[in-house]
Image 1: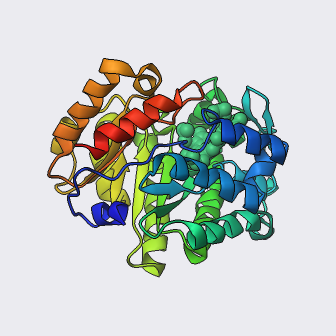
Image 2 (image 1 turned 90 degrees about the vertical axis):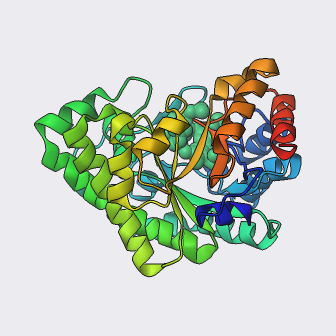
Length: 336
Ligand code: CP3
């Protein structure tokens, strides 16, 4: 598997490629399967259909990795918090009032279908295609749990981080523990490597970044590596800025996914030697296609040649991306 070769530090060229949100609404077959499932959460919890949507982009584009089809908010749902997806509006949760509202014991039973999806996938994916398991990182998941929705900059979470940090830390403790068990279950079910999505890392000032971002991610990586010595973990501390190097050194992740605003060459200088990167094409260019996209793809390829790198976007693919642009992207990379 080219993806694992890179995660083991081998430069592979052309680089292995997959795209965040590669299973999604830009694919008509995804929309059809989601309609069959009824709604998004039912799709995440239906192993046969979740397996199908995970495989759709692999069949169509031949990506080097498949990412389990699920969502970072399945875990808080399994811990007992209500979750719904309002059509076209994103997730809605009843804002959490105390950590004691969460129960760890029942969670594995509720997310059991996700583990069945992982097992199905490992059994039917081509052997050269890596299967990525994932979870949201604790404070990113907590942002949705405390504010009840995205899109508004998480004002309650940010205020609580100053006014009631022990409440935030109590939630992070529960989530950290639950995330370790959840990711271990994915490894046991057949995930080849893992990714931690810390989408909202960039909203926390340095002191909070250390407590709320680095420390929970560090604990998760340490626990999983203690039990699974060879397991590779990709972190995605989005918009971490100058905290990126410290995040890598202290969490012990094997690789980091870079957001669109981070220059790969400068990140290499600021991070520990031999850091492995993933990313970071602007998803907007994948929508626009044409010369702008092609130039940006070639620039990334030239920058990473000779180093271990995983080609990806700087954030998730959007529903308005034409499939033809994804096919063209793959052609450029494969011909490099
Ligand atoms: O990448 C993949 O193909 C794997 C599946 C995956 C999804 N969400 C499917 C999804 C993964 C890894 C995620 C992670 C996720 N979910 C994150 C972290 C990464 C990121 O994008 O920042 C976050 C913050 C979430 C929470 C979430 N889920 C939001 C805010 C939304 C609504 C936004 C939107 O695009 O509509 C979702 C819904 C969601 N998760 C969809 C998919 C395919 C769209 C659901 C649909 O309508 O079919």
